Length: 351
Image 1 (cartoon, rainbow, N blue to C red):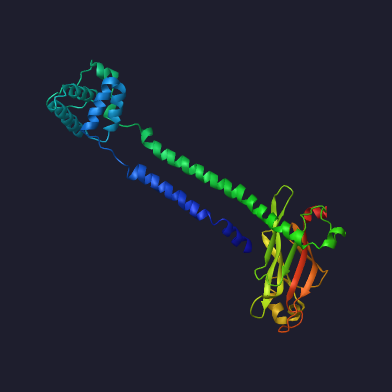
Image 2: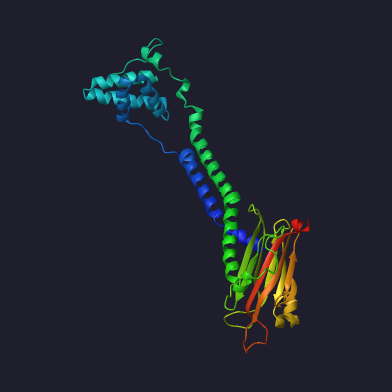
C-alpha cells in the first residue's frame, strides 16, 4: 500500500496532462467541425476575384469556386448581379466585364447590365477551367483538419507514454540514490573507514550498503533506499521508519521502528519491528504492533534478516542510545538508532 501511494503521488501530473489534451481535442473539433468560422464573400470580394481573373484565369476561377462553395447557385447569381450593376453604375464597365467573365467561368447566371449568356461548349474560358460536377469540395480537403488533430493527439500521447515508462523510472531511481548516498557517507564513523567492514560490500549478488540513522527530534523520520542491478534495473526498496511513539508533546518519543523490504518480483513488503527494551517487554505494545511484523528487541550489534522471493537484507544495529528522561520509564524511547543495511539477490548468493 505504501508503494502504491508513492507511485500515485509521483504520477499526480498525469491528471492535468490528460485534461489538457482532452481540452485541446475538444476545442479543435468544435472550431473545425462543429462550429467552424465561416466567411461570406461580398461585392468587393467578387470584384477582387474578377481583377485576379484577368491575370490568371485558372487560379482565380479555382479560388472563387472554393470561396463561393458555401453559397447556393441563387445566392451566387444575386451576388454577381449586384457586383456587375454596382460597377456599371459607377462607370467601371471594364471591371463589370471582368466580373461577367468570371461568372461565365463559374457557370453562374447573371442578369441586368453587363450580363452575358453562359459560355457554350467551345468557349475558351470554359475549356481552360472545367468545372467539377456540382462544384463539391474534395472529401480529403474536408477531412484534413480532423486528420491533423488525430496526428497531434497521437504524438502527445506517445510522448506521455515514453515519459511514464522510460523517463519517470530513471528519475525515481536517481532520486533514491541521491537520497541514500549522503546518509551512508555521513553515518559512517571515522574509525569504521579504517577497520575491516563487518559484512562484504561486493559479495556475489550484493546491491550495495546503506545506513539508516535516526536522532531524537526527527519526528518525520522515514528513509528508503532503491535496490537496483548494475544496469539500473529496479528490483525493490528497503528502509526504516517510525512505527510507534509514547507519551505526549514534542519531540516524539519513538519506542519502535519499522524495518522493511519490498520485492518487485514478489509484489509484497516484509517488515520487522525494532522495539525498545520497554516496548518489547510491554505486552500491550507488542500485541498492538504484532500485525505489522515480528517484534525484535533492539540490541547493539544484533543482525536482523529479512527475506522475500528474490531479495534478502542483513541489517545490523551499529549504534543504540536510549533517551534519558525522568518522566518516562528507563530505556523506553530512543535518543539515537543507527542501522546498517546490506541487501543482496538471493539467487546469485545461493549460487
